[in-house]
Image 1 (tube, rainbow, N blue to C red):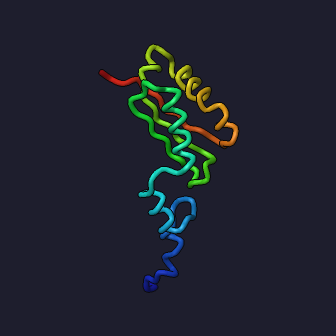
Image 2 (tube, helix red, strand yellow):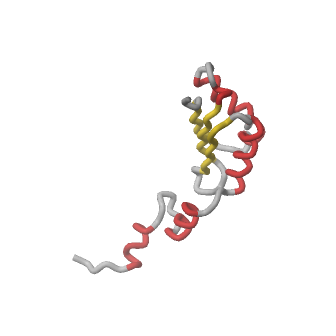
Image 3 (cartoon, rainbow, N blue to C red):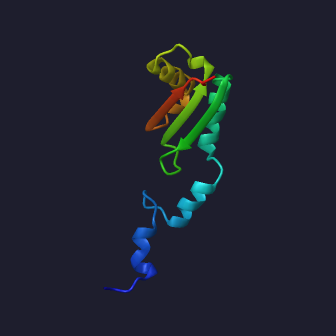
Length: 110
């Protein structure tokens, strides 16, 4: 069996998108990206009654794909597809520059 060496382990020490481990760790523990902040701010403005908004850039930091989790009373008595349409409408301009969007919506439980 060959001895372990950092050079041999290099491919194993990378994130799922082939980013250096250090970059992955910085991204994991860093504050939100500029794109995440922008999308979050728009959602806060469009859904003022939201009790939770979480926006995550799942494209590795380039802003091409986001995952959005939003909990708001405004979704009450609306079907999931209607809730998602509301989010899509709120982000209409930003979506033009994205490749994909994952949306998770919910109504607060009282």
